Amino acid sequence: MNTSQIVIEQIKRVCGLDVERIELNSDVQGGGVFVDEEKNRTVFSFTLSNKQYAFALVGCGEKERVTAALAREFALNVIGKATAVNEPVRAFLDGIGVMPQGIHVGKSDYYVFATYCSASKKNVRDYLNTMAGANDFVADMGDGITAFCKKLDNDNDYQSAGEFAAVLKENLAEEIKENVKIGVGGVAHGVSELPLYYSYAKSALINGAEYDQNSDIYSYKEYALIKLLSSLSDSTIEKYVKTVLDRNYREVLSDVELMSAADAFIKHSLNISEASRSMYVHRNTLIYRLDKIEKLTGLNIRNFNDAMTFRVACLAYKML
Image (tube, rainbow, N blue to C red):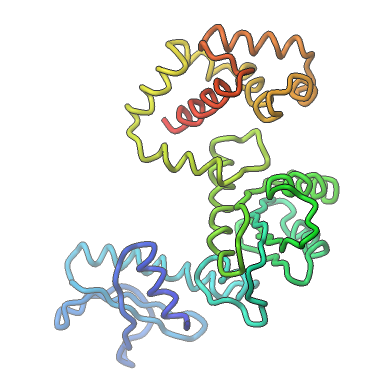
């Protein structure tokens, strides 16, 4: 698949827009957007690495001019990614390039992660490269994000991608002395699924940073719930939050101490001792805060079902 085909496919997939590659007359130079009334089309073009690209969409009205201008910016971004330093692996994981040559195509499983550390992304990449096996993938994806796809062996010691991510986070923190955040895409079943699961990992990283800034590891499976909630209206979400947290929900959700206590308690699997230790507070202090949450909301988050209800309500509230 050549560069023009990649652009056309991505514009169709992401924007739902049909465009075609065209050849411009030799007297047309530079780039931009212009209307070809004779052929009832709007053209956008640009030049990269001394090569000119031109595409056209049907119609020549003001709406088409605006659409073509946006499509031109999108196409520039697509080609920029496809020609990045880590291309073709980066382009492949971004879903805009073909599978790199020499890769063994099979049904092997891979853990897929997106790690973020803007301060020391090179150090992160270097460390991941040292621990990567012959069939693993490490790529700089831009914006401080490094992709890591770990092939699973038959003697894999980890129960899940999340467990591996926790160990990876600990090792990175010790090695580079910087805070690293990790998006967990899950387990890709075969090389062909790596782009899909990398998109999951990146989505988890972005959503996690927005909705749960106190954590460092974000699972796509959890944040898939956010995508579901985002389809609901604000009034529906607010009605749900009011229903499950009672009328005092604003008092609870705006209280930093109560929310920190709840987050730590849920994060540590409803274990009082581990949660209080992670917060550097006495267990009785944590118990007091959990009791206060129950008094204000009617939810005893020491109970698993109530804890999950509280967690979903908190995520929903952050979307308002």
